Image (cartoon, rainbow, N blue to C red; front, side):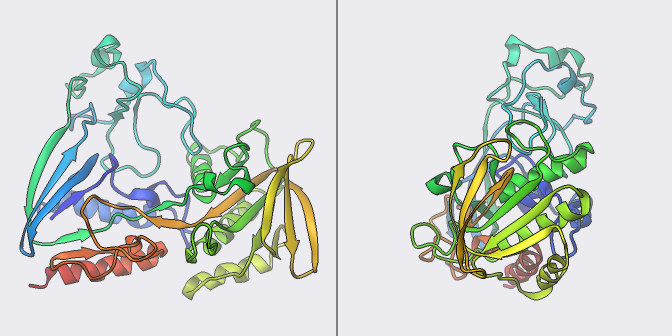
Length: 379
């Protein structure tokens, strides 16, 4: 079995989560077990930083060509961190990324393989070379170049996952103009960074602690101008975030603006928990737009409060947009439905799995992936 991962670590989005529902477990809850299984199984290999270039052949005899980007640090790395200590270059600041992260870095979250890599867009290579001076394990390869690998396999499971809908396309929510308007995934990574670094949540614009945070549901979803479908996990995600704030931040009040609360299975307990919390408000109403206000709470939401029957304007310190999920595609010419998700039925031997077929939570994705693996084992 060969795993092909576009990023330079396994685990995808989940590895950088703060926690996931319904149990609100940290990523290590399940990923550590799977990583251990990969390490101990000689029949499993993997390529990280790899992209699928082409797929040809037929069921039982596929040839997959992949391109592997260099990490600039090889498997001799012991994760000592000396390369990052002496590296003078910093990666651009992003939400959820550790401030001052160097060009030589280890991935935030639960990284596997737990080895450093070098950002080729930031590193000055041999013009600097400070990492070469401190590495005693001959792990630095600044002159490494991309490699092409061709694999011969019998079956292909496509588990390319999801990406968020582009928040910048919803102009009335001012995502590009306001640093304190963030997506739900960015907010998740901010919370995760606080957990890792043992720090407290601050807002991006000025580093102050927010007092009121608004969660805007269906940001782009269930909208004929953007994503006409429901993304299934957004309500559970916002409730999870609000419960995390209620538990960890006693001075923060959260308010969730929603069209309908759509939860299923065990995730329904999140709604029951939130309904009994004093610092969590659930308001049925669609946010029309976000405008710039005055003072510290400078984000004003214009919303129609359906339950009370009037239009409302209210100021918040931060706004979290519950963006919809869209499929993450691979260059393989696979069949998709009208929303771009992979159809379950492809040509023989190619099996799409989990959230590249439809939006789903972690628990559902694991069950679906298990079913797909069993299908791939059948002859």
